[in-house]
Length: 437
Image 1: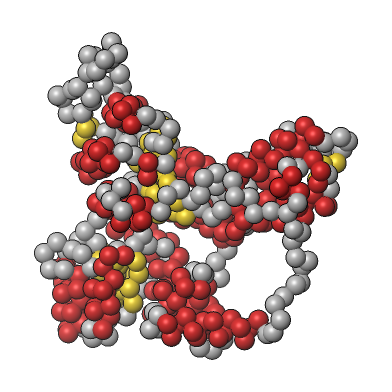
Image 2: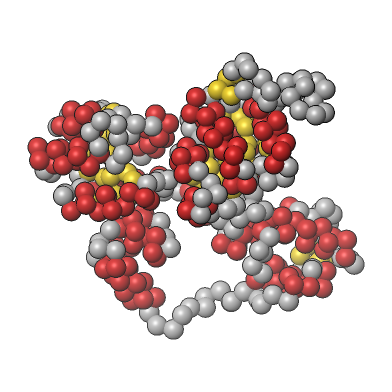
């Protein structure tokens, strides 16, 4: 089989051009060549020209499942990885039984995808330096591997035009990541316009987003541009998009699909030339299930999802963040204060930490911030366990048994086993090799 400049070739079959672009960029960065298609018919045609195929389950014309069946009848040794939304899992399992090697749920974790491809093509483990893959913005703290990975993923999406959905609790810094994506995009010279969908009255959101004509409603004495119009040639950041009223969601979906919208009270169709970055602290899958959020809008927003971990899951960032938040640079944190800060779970995340540091700066009496200068609930938090503290028993044995149990419970599917264990698929593959499993 032919290679591209000595690189093994991955077939990427997805009818969403934005998704194809993201996958192709990630594969090229990982050292693979690519060939792309948008239909099941093209998948069948390209099967003889690739070493592995990524195949979307839902395609126009011949479905991905039917295409996989036909491909495997003719090329039984070709590894096929199915790309599937969570509602398609039963279809994916059926295809797995017919010979596909693996399936990965959308939104796709690109690191897990590359690890799956490496594993299927027997590529030696990659030594990836999260620090070196992307430049963290000046003034942004990302000492933890979890937060550096966020910027790696965001950096990959930044160079494309696809819609990005930022996921995370309130106060984790979704606005910082949105700004990072905009500044590294082709639209960086244009504006970044932010709209907080949860802070606007329901009867004003449509006018805020799309503008209105003079006389469109009581008080509309003059016409007004909407935020999409203001974001022309730039990006629009729809914060807390999960709070968007249900009756307005079809209009946002129409903009995302066609770029077209009308001002309130207007008859002329306008075109939005802006890249959408959305964010939510709500689990939108649950909102889809309870009927408060449209399923088609969810998938249109969720082309690339970037999950931002809460502060309690990236404790390496707490002290560097706290130090940058001290308004009086002469102040220092006492060792006991550092232990209290790292030991607290920060349910309000970075925003709560900032408030705590502002209070501590005011309350401090001297050059050192003491635990009593912190908010009561923070200073009463338990100290972090001393370094070197381990569970009773051999950790490798415990991990090995946990991995084996997870693989057994998921029928050997590494993607789902990794999710069950709470680790990335790449980490799971490394552990399997390390333990000789």
